[in-house]
Amino acid sequence: MSNDRPELNAATDGESTTGNLEETIRHLEEDLEEEREKRWSYQYKLKQIEKELQKHGLSANDVVDGRTDPSKLQKLQVESCNRTRLEWRDFPLGVLPDAVQKHSKAQAEAMCVDPSMIAVPSLVVLSAAIGNSRHIRVKSNWTEPATLWEMIIQASGALKSPAQEKALAPVFRKEKALKKKWERELARWEEKDSDERSQRPTRERRLVNDATVESVALLHSDHPRGLLLYRDELAGWLGSFNQYNKGDSDLQKWMEFYGSRPVQVDRKSSDRPAIFIEHPSVSVIGTIQPEVLEDRLDALHFQSGFVARTLLCEPPERPRRFNEHSVTKEAKEEYHNLVGRLYSLVMPDRDEMTIDKDLSLNGEAREVYSEFFDECERLRTCLADSRKPAQTTEKRRSASCE
Image (cartoon, rainbow, N blue to C red):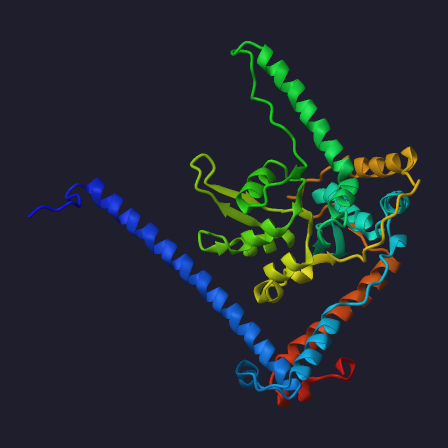
C-alpha cells in the first residue's frame, strides 16, 4: 500500500514533525485564548446592557421580542448619550510653558480650530522630548516617567491631522537633522578603505511610525532615551492589540511600556531573538474618528486600564472662515527652541540606585497631586462598589460616593 506521507525513521524527520506539531498546538492555543477574550468581552457588554434595561424597568427579552414601548427605548438612548458624552471644558492653557501657550493660540487662530487641537499634542511632544532623561520622584521609592498617550478625536475633515502636525514640527525637524548627520557620517565611513573602517554608523531616531511591539522594542533597545510613536490614524495601533506573540497580547506589552516596567519581547529573528528594555519610554500621539474609536474600544480596553492611561480629547468643531491670522516667526522659534532644549537634556545612568537628575514635587505640585490621587481613589472605590451585589454595595458605599 502506498503512503504519501514521509517515513519517520530518521531523527531529523522526527524532530521536524515534532516541531511542526508544537507550532500547530501553539497557534491553536493562541486562537483559543483570543476567542475566550472575545467571548468575555461580549458577555460583559450584554450584562451592562441588561443592567441598564433593568434600571428603567425594561426586560431584554421584551426588547428582543418587540414588546417594549418604542418611546421608552428612545428615552433610554437619549439618556445614555447624555451620560457618556462629558461636557466640554476649555483646555487649561495656563498650566503650559509660555512658548507652548503662545504657539497653540496662534496656530489655533490661524486654522480656526480649538486651541486644544495644538496644545494637547504639544504636551505629548514635550513628554517625548524629556523621555528617560528625567523622571518625577513622587516619594523616595516612587518615580514616574514623563510618558503620555494622546488621541485627538475628530470627524474627517476637521483639520485634526494638520493641527497635530503643527505640534509635531519640532520633532520632524529633529528627525531630519539626525538623518542628515547620519548621512554625512556614512559618507565619510564609505570613503575609507575596508581595513580602516570602524563599525558602520547607525542612525539616531526619536520618531517611529510602525506601531507593532516588535518594531518599537527593536528601535527602543538602541535608543534608551525613549521614542515618540506617531500615527496619523490610530485605528491600526488599536487593532494590533489583539495580536499575540509567545502567548502575550500586544496590549499587555503596551501596558508594560506605559508603566516603564521592564519589558522583554521575543522575536522570530535569529540575530536578536530576545529584546530586553529595562526602562521603556514610548509616548504616543495620533488622531482617530469618533465612530472608529467606538468600534475599536471594547470592555478589555477599559478593564485593563488602557483607557484610563490615555488622554482622549474631542474638541468642539469651530466654523472655519478665511482670516488674516498668521503665526509669527517668534512664536514658532520659541516653541521649537523649548522642545530642542528638552531633547538636549543629558541622559543619566538609570542603573544607579538614585538618580540625581530626577525631579521632586514642590509644595504646590505635591498638594495638587495629592488631591488628584485622592479623587481617583474615591472614584475607583465607587466603581468597584457598583459592580458588587446590592446588599454588599449598600454596606460599603461611603457618603462621598452617594
